[in-house]
Image 1 (cartoon, rainbow, N blue to C red):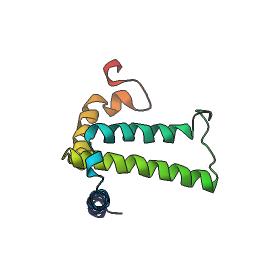
Image 2 (image 1 turned 60 degrees about the horizontal axis):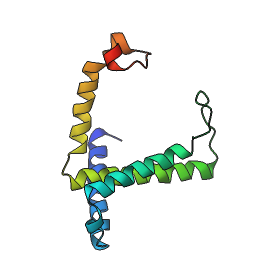
Image 3 (image 1 turned 180 degrees about the vertical axis):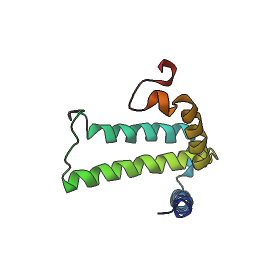
Length: 121
């Protein structure tokens, strides 16, 4: 998928999510606090699938487990997109800005192959 197609798809998805909430009169429940809490809860539900897995072993997922994880990831994305929409944050621009910051924090010559935090490089 091209960058432009991805940008368009995410924009359309944000509109669809806003409309989904609007027609159900759920906007009243979508205060930033509620959305942020829901985002954290759904992220924890993703982690639950890997809670007791060996960290160094790539999990082999059964189709049903892969689908369950996909649905949890979708929930995370839904709440992330709703929160950014409610706060009027251009998420794509925020990601680009954060990547630029991280590029400065983690120069390739000092960070390649290392998991060291930027202030310890």
